[in-house]
Length: 256
Image 1 (cartoon, one colour):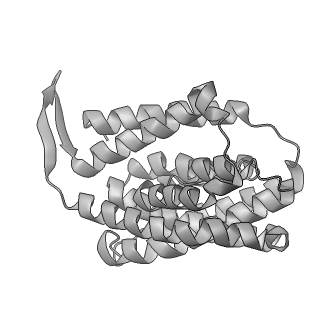
Image 2 (cartoon, helix red, strand yellow; image 1 turned 90 degrees about the horizontal axis):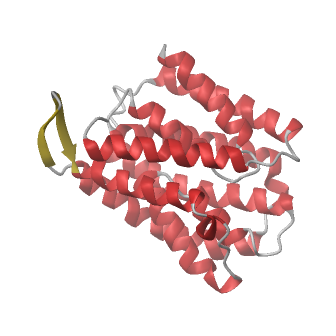
């Protein structure tokens, strides 16, 4: 069953989020969280995210704005290092609280609570119009890179903030997509080696499930490039936001 669920989510998420600049990791993380610990789910999702971005880079890499990619991407690398270190530190913390509610055992670790709060913040970012429509000028590229890279390293949720910072720079649609993919690769190349050394058990990694997710995401990205160039995704963004909110509540309550 997990192969069917993961492949379908990876395929549709990759296809529908090709032009939004984010969404694959957001949708895959809660699915993987049902099968692995939160830390492992973030690490496995990161691997799928990186490989899919490398594939997309082959599709849109010629349109990258090198100046923007460097000015935003280099600070993002530093932010990703800090965020990944924070995730590793939190993964070893003890339970924040334990108990029982309506017969259900609750055991909330620091990592679950922190990631749950991050997910709520990103959900509100898409739900509240004043936040969803927020854009930033060129002077915010360096702090924007640090912030989005930090959350990329901590929870994998880098795309929403990255898109908010890049969308108002006057880039063409092709340059916006290509530059975002390049920056995402910077962050993924930074965080995944740290995950592999601390929170990802390489011997017990579910490689078959990982391959299914990667191939499904490749197919989705290819179809996204081919068929969905003019698709508007406000409904998808709201769906993702409410999904994040539900998962966050589950983490904070100790159910996930």
